[in-house]
View 1 (cartoon, rainbow, N blue to C red):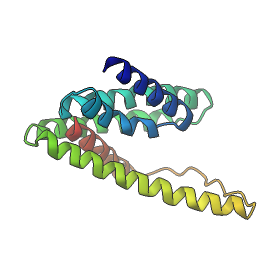
View 2: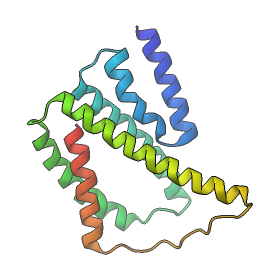
View 3: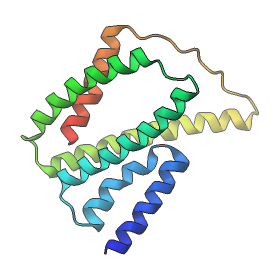
View 4: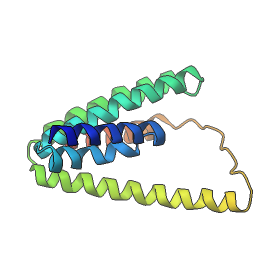
Length: 158
């Protein structure tokens, strides 16, 4: 079983490297159903995989000048508050409910990725390039609400 787990982990790493973050979504089912870890432990380990992968991705974007450090630090600090609150609430939820929520988030993300991919494919078929939108600054309340939501969901899934 460990050889199968390591083989699947290598495939996850390959998909993370090629696609960005999509491979991380299959980490939890592999940890639960192939390697036999509990739901709560698997979700926490899966989030650690996402965190480390995101850190490497963010470092590359930072070197290219694509990261606004002030916004990242503010978002991160507020998200940590949400994560703490979500983690405190997660003790009242069973592992099965957490897996169901995780699966729901996965399906919603897949839907939006599929929808956006179809738009890009339609533009490519017409040989048009999608206009690159100018980055805009979000107001602090909007950014704080988004950070609390992301952090809360993350903490709840821990």
